[in-house]
Image (cartoon, rainbow, N blue to C red):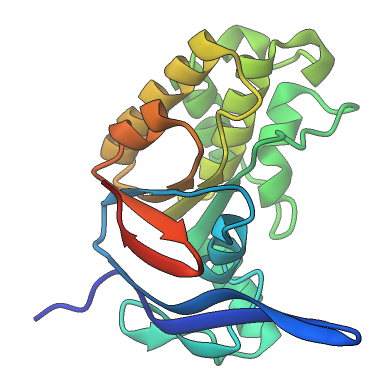
Length: 227
């Protein structure tokens, strides 16, 4: 049987506190995600959703358990190889767009390519993606000249520039109004299909969670099927 694209096996994470018991955020979390699947992770504030996303995105390491991509345990990799894997295979979208205000839309999108050298192919890919999300005419604008929904679409295009296999989105619609959130949810579904992305979204939005192929609940450090 083919290994899942992503597997978490017995993952635990705790945070130490001076002169107090450690806070156990995640307790033996198990998760299998198939290639091309879209998964929503929901749960109350403070339940560890962002921590879980950081472990999946190789931004942090579990205290126990395994995080595997295509059968390889990546949690045991040294920081250098782990960073290379993260940069090559994972794209991130956050609640706040984190665009650089002094750069144009196109320049913001191209930021991930600067580390290895921005090429004509990168610029072509950026223009193509901006056109697909309806921002072709905005490529020379600054972020301050865009609406909140437009800025978040730019952040999404930036995350897709290097063709990641996995897209991680942390409350991507949290700062948008209802119409902007609905538009972004529709765009995420479309890109999940057309870009053949595996997608994991942390969200409080029931509407966004309903757009994913399945929804999981993180509560009391345990991940289970959402009702």
